[in-house]
Length: 116
Image 1 (tube, rainbow, N blue to C red):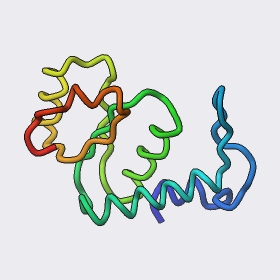
Image 2 (cartoon, rainbow, N blue to C red):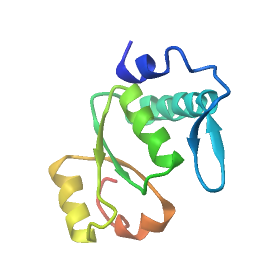
Image 3 (tube, rainbow, N blue to C red):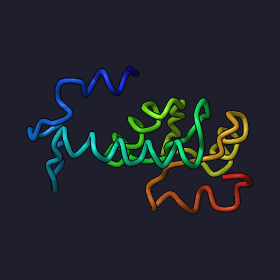
Image 4 (cartoon, helix red, strand yellow):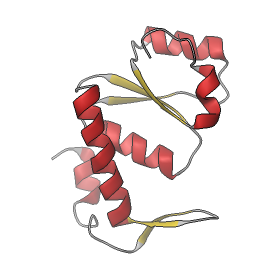
């Protein structure tokens, strides 16, 4: 059992809200389902024991991506959304990141980075 499985051990089937935003309410069960989906994709496409970047604002997407990275046996590298493209490139290259989960609005900041 890893840390994410431990966190959801008793709540993974709960319909009570885990994340509430101005526009939506997402249950424990729905978050858990999405974590498993993303984790499966990561395991299939990136493997394990990798550093995977996240460039996103605090949101359900960030929570689900972060939890899925940890669940899949990888390390989440959170990249500050205020980072310049040069800083992002530096973080990605120094950490040897090959996969980045990002909000669409930050896509232009990683365009052209080799290997990502």
